[in-house]
Image (cartoon, rainbow, N blue to C red; front, side, top):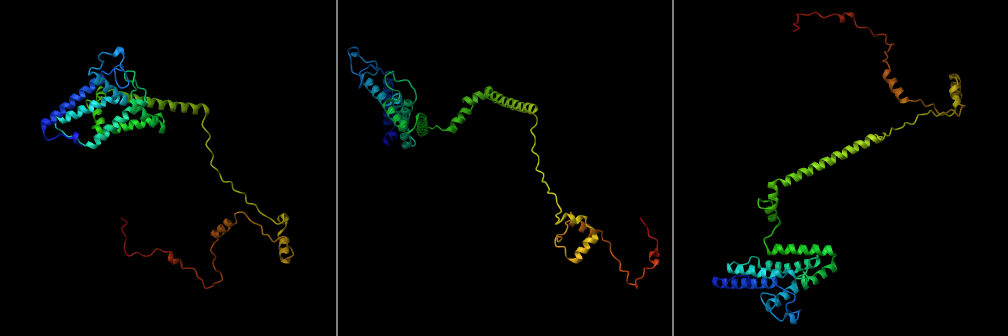
Amino acid sequence: MRFLTPTGNKRLNELIGFLCLTLAVLMAAALFTYWPADESFNVSASSGNSGQPHNVIGPIGAYSADLMFQVLGFPAFLLPMAILWLGIKWFRSRPVESQKATVFGYALLLVSLPSLLALIPFPDVRGAIPAGGMLGKLLASALLAGFNTWGAVIVTIALLITATFLTTSFSFSGTHAWASGPRGPIGAVGKLGILQKAQAKWHDWRARREQERMRRRVEANRLEGRRPVGKAAVPVETPKTIHLSDESDIFKSKEESDEEEEDGNSKSHKAPILMLNQEKAEKSAKKTAEPKIAKGNANYKLPPISLLREGARSQKLDEE
């Protein structure tokens, strides 16, 4: 892009820069002194306006200001600002870095800012022209057709921030560093101790709220009493019963039962009587059984008593 790159002739660059600065001043003066009643593209001259227009630049300023405001609204002031910035670059013979990104960002800025001014309530230009101009009205209508009001505003703000990134050296980290520095607002507040005091008050308020919550809980437990703790489920053992085929067997004598077993005629007494803890009784019987000594062997003799005598010692032992 040739118009963004100064030439090797420094005098020519200064001349082009001077012309750009002059054009920027004329456009800014025409915009600042715009008057809706001046003769322009959409205002015809009347008998009361037959004299000189209110615009300091004259009829050309009135026509050009009316045209810029009708199309862009208040963002029309971006045009003289861009020409002024370009004139300074040419005057100092310094090329524009990232030319394509800069041009794209500037175009995005001219699109997003009128849309934002058309979406939000903003005063009209001199009470006659909408703040976003014709372009802002058209873009705002298109955004509202696809989004609601808040969605359209969020999209427009995102486009505006993107345009700012592309056209300037703005960054969030740099802005935070500047704000936290000694010249920034956060740094100035930190010097005065306002931020520390606000943070201390915030922690004190949270501590008081927590104490009040604990006090209410203790008071509620005192009034209502402790909640009963759920009892642990204790397994209930089913009682062991003795199943008998006939309950009359209990009252029979031992001799009668022996006789019935020898004869084999009793058919209804086949089921044995079950005893409780039968396995434990058998185990205890095995443990308490005494060893038996065979008495039938006549050749067994007891050991002599002389084995119990203390053996003779050849020398005395020192216990220490």
